[in-house]
Length: 127
Ligand SMILES: [Zn+2]
Image (cartoon, rainbow, N blue to C red; front, side):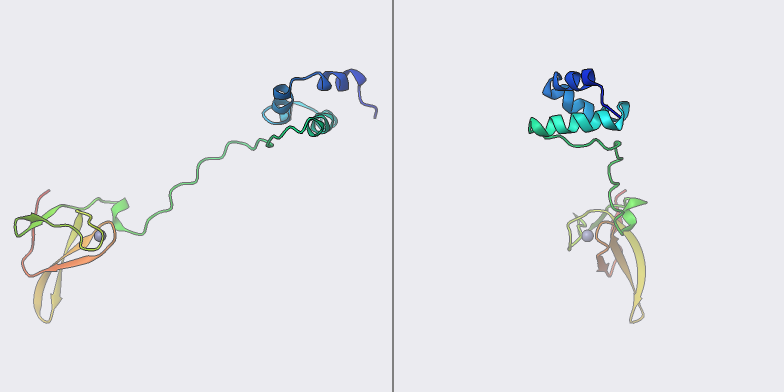
């Protein structure tokens, strides 16, 4: 198949931007042989361009393994102070009761890092 001379002339007459656009955002509008001419023309002009891919959805944030993606947790107060996670400083917890050597303890599980703080007396829930 001979390539249309006018087409070659047309492509050579394109502005750099038009040429890049042809090879990227409008790549689906042209036949392969047209694109081949355009590519070699772009190469001879040392144009750099990236072949456009269909827009990809941004990667979703990886799910963190913590209960916080379901429920943020509650804030607690102990000894007149807001309870902060001693590992990460987060202020939201899930309360649990655990038995240790026959004694029931209050456990606050950090909803961010899952660190557990233990209390002999259950901290007051703020909200
Ligand atoms: Zn924490």
